[in-house]
Image 1 (cartoon, rainbow over the protein chains, first blue to last red):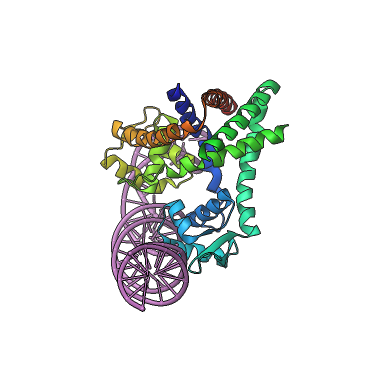
Image 2: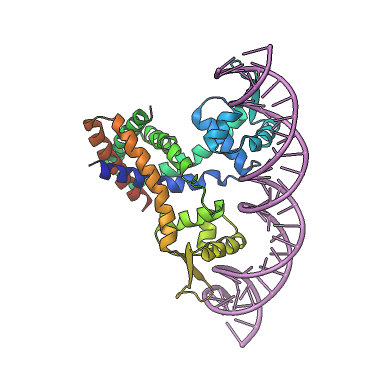
Length: 143
Length: 143
DNA sequence: GTATTTAGTAAAATTATAATTACTAAATAT
DNA sequence: ATATTTAGTAATTATAATTTTACTAAATAC
């Protein structure tokens, strides 16, 4: 029982792989690492300090110094002192930083909407219901 | 209607993000690009020539020459002439190459199985059904 | 049959990422 | 109060990724 469930989960990942691999093809002025950092901030919807980003992305903090300061110069993030820890600096996305990320999702959104026409009305309803269920339960699992 | 559906799809991606970002943390002897290439071959379950990998991963073919030949030396892939095109060379995963990929999925599998205990019996059944439905319909959409 | 395109290779130069070491200042442990 | 740990910065070195140019041989267009 549990085994088949996990297999369905695994099968889900390649199904989303196509969308994912196209995510960072928007040849912006951002480097790979810069993209990773603002994606991380966007996904998690809050400000992080360098140490948190470092462990979250499994990157040495020494690397982040340059990456993040470049992002700051280009206006994608802002630094502000962490009120709870005077050593730490919180990195937050600016509206410009959020916008870049949202653009990427918009592309996936459009592609999905187009492919949706290959399903009939009933299948579309089923898909919406099933997706909603999956999202609710996956969220519960991680909480 | 269609709008909410696409939003559920978008919401699914961050839900799988955790799994995805851990995928390539297995500090093997493989470089980033090498990982990409064998992941691509594994995901698509067949041999490709360099041009196909090049366009599929949006990487210059010149880069692939070195990446793939390194993979070949390390025994992760084999090259064989394409019977349909005497210019082309087909790149296929070896058992060793497949094994490395499967190991990555096994980790995700285990993590998922552990978190599954946070759902009760009924929720687990619901999740399995919903995941199955999503996979079937997403596959249909891409075909 | 000739010209053009395409798949793959190769080498050089540029840029990005990774790893190492060392330092400051604030936080925490004892 | 002192020692140790932790967050961030900085500079250096090594490695990897990207770009550019150029070449061969097979495939395709006309």
